[in-house]
Image 1 (tube, one colour):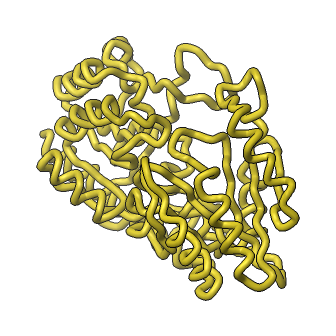
Image 2 (image 1 turned 90 degrees about the horizontal axis):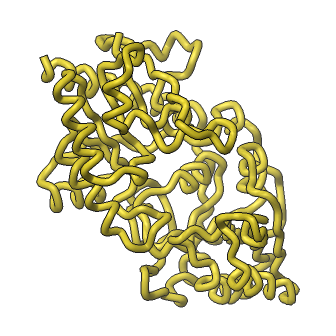
Length: 361
């Protein structure tokens, strides 16, 4: 049995790295079973289920623990809370206690911060200190090898939507709904830069409309995401007869699956980024994706790409991509295919854990 301390363990991505519970077909032959530890409770809890900042990356906290035992520390998210020097101490602690470090590089550019300098310095420590590095696409693996001289194992993103929910049929509609979800206007998102081109594209297609969703946090003075200037500009699209603007609390999972099933294509207006769980949820539910080419979204799965980066947007390319999404609809992935993929992903991770543990001995 392999004990894995995952940072975090409660994230949907991490849960879906394990076999589907209760399905004997998902046993992992030739590999030890993997047990993922629950997230340690952080020093201060502000919201239910909070796992951040992760105590497992605090070398001082690790040194004080006698009950937290694990073979592998697998880091996914949450290390932005720690300076490179602190992360280096954690790597040293793991080495001294013969505990392996596995890193999955989800983000080569932190999507929450435009200035990526600190993120790369943190990755400098973690990538070089890891016993094994995983990433989600061949493009990201090539970038990792180019910068750090480290070969990463490429393991595709598992399903995001629950398998049972994937079995539900999409609602039938005669219209073509183009979704732009501004979410809470995190740093890498720029819906204002794409809205006019998206509207132009919709007007060139039969029965097409634009739906613009905005999280209520954008208008909440007490929220970290309060952004009244951009929020007001987005609300101006209410004056367009063919744009449906909706402001609401952040979607929970079920509401998000409903939303993605109600739109035909989702526009990802990212100025910078690497991979996307949102994209995978769209694939699960049969929602086409139009994504900027700033990251490796096209490596993840079928998307319609357009040029967009920190300082540019190719409006004509965006219009063409939306039209292409109308002509070539993306079917939902078969949940049986996703289940088989999950079984493979679980086996690949178990093999990595077994290898790094053997190499530590």
